[in-house]
Length: 121
Image (cartoon, rainbow, N blue to C red; front, side):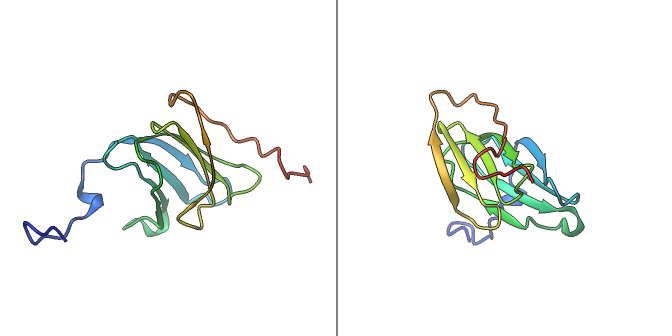
């Protein structure tokens, strides 16, 4: 609640610029949206069957999110690259990153190949 106006603040009512969309690799009705806004660097997981609010919001970038990518072999892994010079590895079923990497330049396009731990079966 906003202390000065007494009104509830709703992130969905803000004008958010969504930078990228990534569809879930196994669930056709689910997708992730990422905001490039430095004031609202959020990744939201949506299910279009229940489109009134996001299933989950992932908020660990300090600046806008530039790119996201699902692992095609393991839908419990999602990468995000932000203007804060970090690539975060998420389990989208939790609200905290599993791991992170520091990058030199934030203008990164990311792909997820899932080489580590993948047996190919």
